[in-house]
Image 1 (cartoon, rainbow, N blue to C red):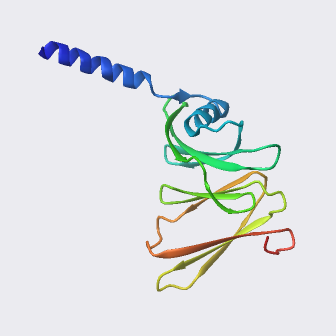
Image 2: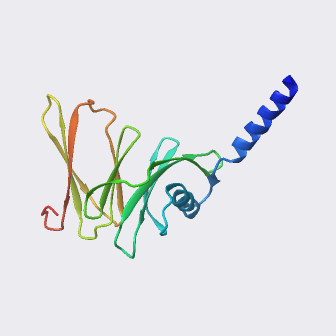
Image 3: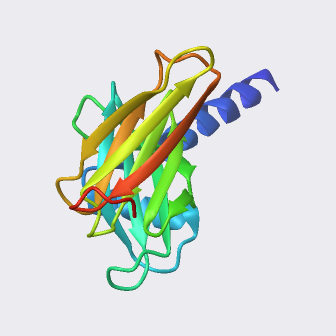
Length: 171
């Protein structure tokens, strides 16, 4: 009986290791994301963020240039230069406005936008008991993904994101 339990445990371990989803390309990562999030339309890569040996891939779905949803998944970067699927971080990212999404990842936030009129994003951070900080981040290409690392920030804070057009006007 003990040998059977050990043998079954080994088989289970081998099966679990064999079930890991390891891929080499962004297209393969998008396929996994589409399956995991059960999204019927094709996903398009918006961008990636690397944090240590973790990679966040942000994708969009929707007809043509119009985005109906953003989603994000975490992959581990292996020594062989491949990527192992870890989890869907957010199968339907929080919408901050028209063609703008956000999700919490690690100790920060990933922002994404496919809005072609957006040229900058203004980020205002207000920590409890501290003056407000403001950052202006240039948007160089669309789609655009930006990671705001909040690891050095107190836990009690508010963040405000505003997209700006080429004239600096709020969108």
